[in-house]
Image (tube, rainbow, N blue to C red; front, top):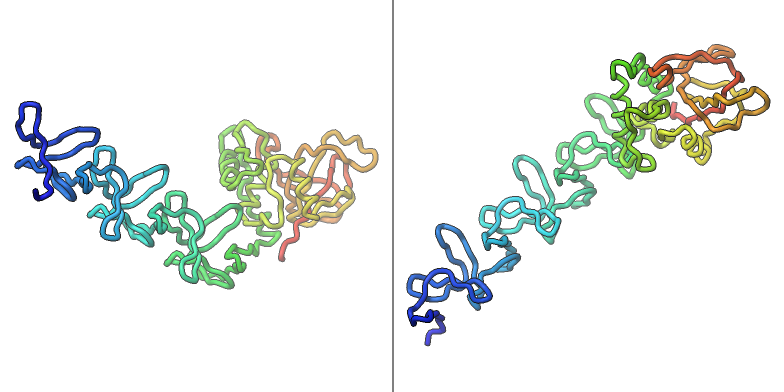
Length: 338
């Protein structure tokens, strides 16, 4: 009469406890079918207006909750249909900025964890692959950015640790790396070799490029002359002005498309220029073969110049060349700011 449901078993007795009839139901100690919130053995469950045990998402009092396959109200981080959600201690799905274990996350209006770029108010933020808000320096794609202590990306001129850096309107850092600094960076690897394994840090540096050129991750067993040059380019944040590749030939193609390829073998290089070699050069006419090797020009003295090369005798070593000498395929001539 009062709308309460009971269930009598085949013996005519009123049943209590769990009952499975297509769905799960629960009958209290008096045999009444439970609806709404109910604690059973200190565990929270929710039964809809028909008494069915609720599974999955449900909405109540302007809040979303989720009950797992055991009908248990979830709390904390949970992965649901390949997306991450966070539920507080009351099981309420959270949205917006959240401080969790001293790390900041952003949960979209639908509750799923945000990754990547995010505009919030007038500022841009970046959430890494784990959803954590980034602060400080971060390489995203092939560009570097700086995020202040509040997580906001900076632009224009900014003093960081006593040094002034310039950032574009898209918040990416404009490298002011000079030709000399580019060369000095390369010299840090002088002597690294395959015998003691020290060359591996060059490969590891290159493989930090994201995305990797042509999607290829360089192996320690690969030739690594162009990988060496590209690692220095990455470390100096010169990706806007120098092509990165693990293939000499592909690097030449990119340099040609960027308008920084010098075909003339008689060209007198500047420090910081990149020389390409072709060991099949017969010395007659212009060398137009596929490039086999590469290095960075470190010194120029009249008609001679010095080059630092990776994978020369399985190590980072110097070579001295003459202008317009045999084996020169051409030069990549970056447009440094200074």
